Length: 167
Image (cartoon, rainbow, N blue to C red):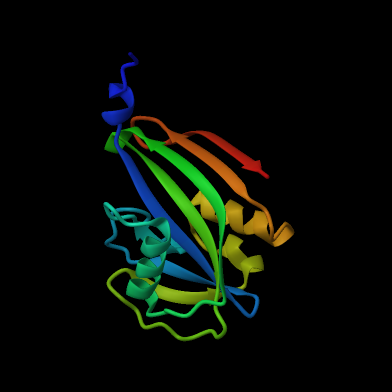
């Protein structure tokens, strides 16, 4: 019989993240400066998947909680990305989605930060996590890309290995 403890003792955090698109712009959240993860960085909308919650339910819950949006023209999975992160003794597995909405709305600032509709061609001007920035660039060239990402970190949290495969 196999020893499954290396799998069952391993901490995995599941999360969802949405790039919300409308009229050629993407909605980015500028994270509040007091956030533990990526303070002051721009990124998509999302968060952790709760126990016994589906990816879809987590995605729509997070979008509603953070933006108030509840109606979507389309939703498409575009990436599964792994982030082994030894400082937290866990691995984050992120499901990334493209969400299209019919109308750009102004979203009020929240405790999470401020929201901005950004031209994707301008993303180099904004500090953001490396995976999100690279993925937006890939999607600009190939809107139908499916991306498998792997971003490994050392004990101090420094990126030591990055692999991106586009299917």
